[in-house]
Length: 114
Image (cartoon, rainbow, N blue to C red):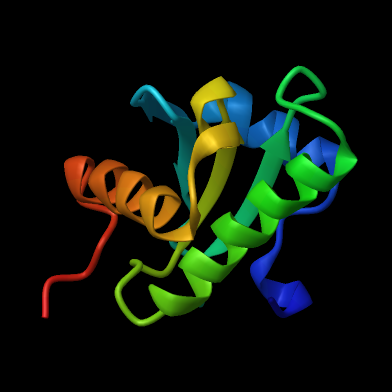
């Protein structure tokens, strides 16, 4: 994923947590913040140490980033999105993670209707 599509700075993460809105399902928590002056969406991914070892956490992060790459044309621009993985993602494969993410994005209308 290109750097311009990532939220990397701790200050930016905290800003989205404080100012943005959140929603969740059993597997993921999503925080989002509308930024009208932004030309494209940005994502940040967080997977806590309670989820598993580094290999497991990195795999979950790769799954989430890949899901956003595949959904790039469908996600509304002008949003910062933070995704926090919960415990059940440890047992999920890529397609299950993508379906869970799609469910959440549809729920809050963060996808563009084509």
